[in-house]
Amino acid sequence: MKRCITVVVLMMAVIGLSVAVWPHQSALAAAALDPNHTYKIVNKNSGLVLGIATATGAVADQEVDNGATGHLWHFISNRGTSYKIENIGSEAILAIKGASTAAGAVATQGGDTGTNDRIWQFSDAGGGYYKIVNQASGLVLGVSGASKAAGATVLQWTDNGTSDHLWKLVQGGITYPDPVALSGDSMLRDPSMIKTANGTYYAFSTSLNPPYKGLEMRSSTDRVHFSNAGFVFKTLPTWTNTYDGGTGDLWAPDISYHNGKYWLYYAVSTFGSEVSAIGLATSTTAAPGSWADQGIVYTSAKGTGYNAIDPCLIIDASGKYWLSFGSGWRGLNVIQIDPATGKQLASNLTRYHVADRTTSKVLEASYIYRHGNYYYLFASIDACCDASSIYHIIVGRSSSVTGPYTDKSGLAMLQGGGSIILSTHGNVIGPGGESIMHDTDGDLIDYQYHDANNGGLATLGINLLGWDAQGWPYVH
Image 1 (cartoon, rainbow, N blue to C red):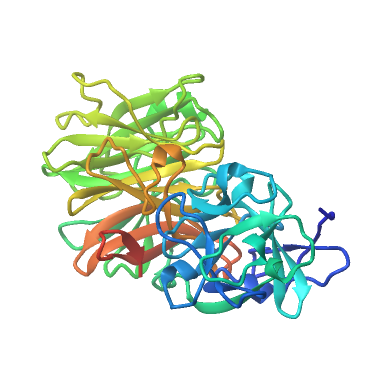
Image 2 (image 1 turned 120 degrees about the vertical axis):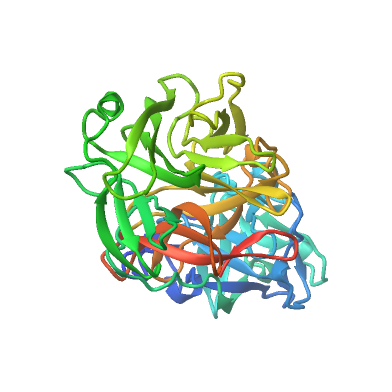
C-alpha cells in the first residue's frame, strides 16, 4: 500500500473533517463525505450498488438499486483521515470478517467496536470515483472476481487498478433532523430533564465551567426558551470531596419522580479515574436549593473492573427498581435498588454486566427506557467532549432489564453491539450524554452536542423519538 498523506479539505465550522489521499492524486471532494446525508455507493465496473442484509454478520454484496435502506450508507467521522461506514437499514458498521488483513476477506457488518477493520479511508481516483481503503489491512474494497453480476460478494483486495475497486458516492436524503431551535441559556452537558406538576421543565446537568458549584439547573415553561435556574445544592455534600478532590465538579445527573418525591442520582469522580461514586438527592418540589442529599449509593475503586458514574434509574414492569451505570472498565452495569432508600437492595448485591466494547474505546452514559415489551439501553460511544468530538448514540433492547441486550442486527451489546441512532450532522457535533422522557407530544431524547455555529460550545439538543414497526427507536 502506498503511504497516505492527510489533506484538510473542509472545515465544517469546527468539525475539522479531513480525508486521506494518495500523494499523486487530488484531495477528495469534501461534500462527498458530508455526514448530514446518506449515500448510495455505486461500483464503476458493474453499475450496481453496495448493499447488505440487516442481520449481524451478513456479507456485503453488490445489488440492483431498488431503493432499499440496505443500499444506503452514512459516513461517520473518526477524526483525521478516516470514517466509519454505517448502513442505514441495519444501523451497523461496514467491517471485514474476522478483522482479517488478508486479500479476499469478505466485507460484513457489526457493532461499532472501534477496531481498525471498521475504519475506512477514501482516495480520489478521479472522474468522481474513489477507492475505499480498509485501515487495518490497507487493502481496497472490491467485488469478487471483478464480477458484474448482482449478488456478487464484496471483499478487500490488493489495489491492482481494476474498475471493480472504484466506487461513486451518490448523495441521498438527510441523515438526521436538526434538534429543536432553543433560545436563552441552553449551554450544558449531560442533560436530564423533567416536567414538574406545575408545568415547569427543569434540565439538570453536569458542572460546566470552574469554579464548579455542583449540578446545574435550567428552567423553561415551553421547552424552547431556557433560563439559568442556579444549582441543585445550597451546600455541596462533604462526602463528595473524597472523589472529586474538593472541586465541586459533579456529573451526569438523572432525574425522576416517585411517590411524591423527585429523585436525582449523580456521579462524582475525576476525569479518567476509576475511583468514583454515585450519590442521590431528593426533593418534593425539584426547585433549586430544595434538595436534600441522601449520601452515597454505590462506589468503585481502582481495580474493581467497573466505574460508578453516569447513573440512570429504571422501574421495570413488575415495579422493581434498577440503576444502570458505567464508563470504561468493562462498560455498563445494572444493580437492583431498594425503593424505600434509593440505594442498592441489600438482598440482591449482584452487579449485572449488560454492555461492553471489544476494545478500550469509550462506552458510557447509559439510559434504560421501557417501551412496549422491551427495555431499550441507550448509550454514548467514542471520544467526548469538545468541538472535535466523535461521540454518538447507540441502542439495543432486551425483554429483561438485566439483559441480554441485542442491537437491530442481532449483535449482543456485550460483544460490542449497538445500533447507531444519532451522530454528527450539520452543526451538531458529537451528540451524546442522552436521556429519554415522555411529554404530551410523545417521547423525547435530550442530549448534549457541540454547536459548530456557536464556537463548538456544549449545547442542549432535543428531538422527538419515534418507534418503527419493529419497535426500534429513531430520532425525528
